[in-house]
Structure formats: structure tokens, C-alpha cells
Image (tube, one colour):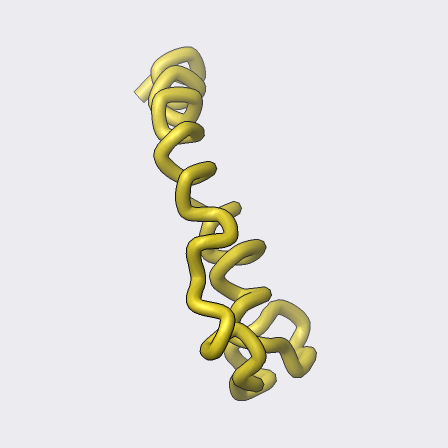
Length: 58
């Protein structure tokens, strides 16, 4: 895949990903996760992983 094709696919996915931001249930967002699941082995909350890490990587 060329760089231009990769960028085009990424841009096409932005709207779908943006709809998911903030959609994670609040009652689950505060649950702490194993530090090894987050970048840098830092303790994080499930909501942060979903709304920041997972969606960004999508």
C-alpha cells in the first residue's frame, strides 16, 4: 500500500472513530487495569485506554 493510499484509508476512518469517543460507559471508565496493559506500565483506567489509546490506534 502506498503512503497516499494509507493516508486515504486513515482519513476515511476518522469519522467512525470520532463517533466512539466518549461512548464508553461511565460506570466502567473508572475501573483500574493491570499496569502492563497500558503504555509504559503505568496504572491506567479502562476509560482512558478506550478513549485515548485504543481509539487513537484505530
